[in-house]
Amino acid sequence: MEPVYKRIADNLAARITAGDLAPGARIPSTRQLMAEHGVAMATATRVITHLREQGLVIARPGVGTVVAGGPSLLPENDRERIVHAAIGIADAEGLGGLSMRRLAGALRMPTMSLYRFVADRDELILLMIDQLMADYPPPRHVSPERDGWRACVEALARLQWSMYRRHKWLAQALSFTRPHLAPHAMAHTEWAMQALDGHGLTPNLQFRAAVMLANHVRGTAVGLEEEAQAEQETGMTDGEWFQTQQNRFAAVLATGRLPMMSRFLAGEDQAFDLDILVDFGLQRILDGLERLLAER
Image 1 (cartoon, rainbow, N blue to C red):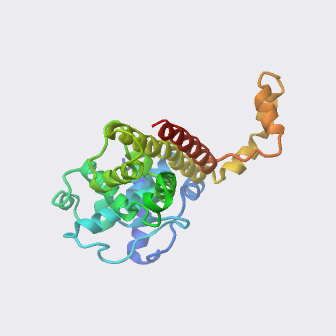
Image 2 (spheres, helix red, strand yellow):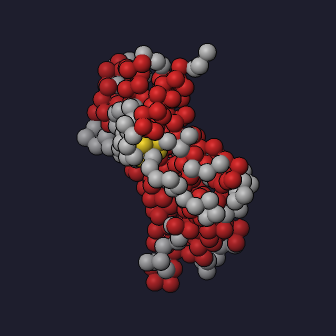
Image 3 (tube, rainbow, N blue to C red):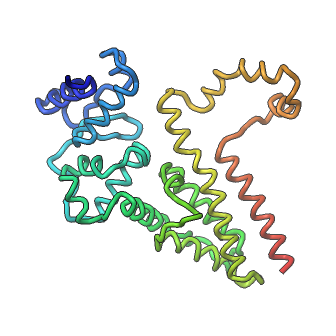
């Protein structure tokens, strides 16, 4: 017996082939599929995934899932464009939505053809990381000689934060315990070490400081993809979700067991998000480095 998800997907595929759904047209969302066909979220999600793997639809940020168009999105023999296509999928659907089959479908090429250019998914992710690091080179508007080490490493940290903000999957893909051998990523570390050079730190301490700063930004950015996914699934921003939890928070605080939290929530400035968190931690790390350099 044909699975329910495939029957629904085949019906949509037929409408796309017949031209009823033109390139760029939005297809029903998972919630619309659930309401229309009386299926669970998992089944509706599988419908969309099946269509993506066939290369019939693509995710467009801010719009939704739309019908793909054109005979071939990218030439088969262009490795750089293949990497950019993979980045586009990860940006729209998260790293979990990227597979060799999914990428091949988006490129309208056989899956096995991809292996002529990348060995496997791990190498593909490495190439994606290196490409993004190349797209976000160390800042050129500051220099240690003119602006000082603090301005330089802070500018680098903020550049990396903007990169994670734009590509929310990237923080999950990076590792500092088993780092990827991506030359352009290593250039970020090299640049931070150069900014700290000449202040009495050994190369070992320069390296640790550079990695500490990068890991603070990356560690905070790990939550960005989860935030985006939660917003997509619930249809609510973090602020809107928090409003729905006010009664539960009030009940917990009413016990009197959390006096410090109660004082915080009763105050005027309750602003808190990942941007605030990364900036607060960054300034404290820079303060600590400043004291360390002064001691040297």
